[in-house]
Image (cartoon, rainbow, N blue to C red; front, side, top):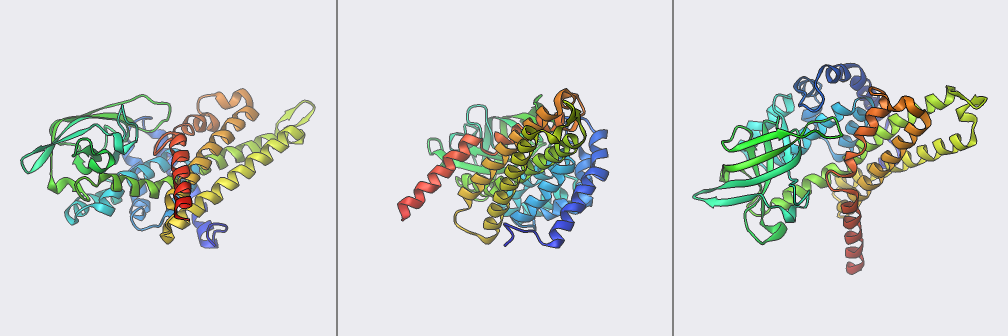
Length: 374
């Protein structure tokens, strides 16, 4: 079963992606500006055919792409993932006109997409969103703000979730496709720990109409959840890629580093710690693959599996990277060191697309639903 073993073609593809990430995509990252949308990088992802694959591949293939790219170049992985996250609602819920306008541009790497869910007072809780869509003739005007939006303010369009029915919780939210050049829409960059672009958006009477709705009015929560159920396991894959990169760096370092009259790997405390990190990384990888395969098979327990995969993988990656820094010592804290970079990158996935605590809540609710059905 694919949860437990990849076939030779998949393994070869992953190896090729690792090589491409390190040799072709890394130089584009180095030439760009940290914290800003890197359009040459996104264009290269389009030329490689990886962006178009976002709309044809299953969840397992998405996980393999994200894990492999993350191993060699986390910025390339994140650029790919953000294109998918922002444009998947258009692919899955958009009209023919919306798809025709935006998906070819996204696939080619010419248009930058963004997923605008989080708000200052609601985080990513779709039921508590305050961005207001006020009825205005045959459409609405948007009033409020979004915060911690990846690719903002440099995106070309946003999948925006706004409240169309006050007091209705998650049932009163609608998803809209909002081009960045709409009058009344402004944004600003935020300086964050992670190196990818993140910003805030302000909506001052931004006009939207029926042609901008993604899916059905007041059913935006479904748009958000179907998107997150697809991408949550692959966030875990991103984390596994980082954990593996940190683990491999640690194996190489401890195999040759002389300390205390010998090589670090010969110290039982070091060897046992590395063994534990490797075991946890492999366990996280298998759980991610299992969740992705369940999604591809259309199994009913995807929300629980996706939450478990994201939870275990992101927490494991944090542990592995932190331990790797400790075993490397002060050199790992120098700007430009792989582990210094991973240390900054690994923290955010435990928060975005539903924090660790949210994943535990989802898992518990799904488990008790099963008890109720039984």
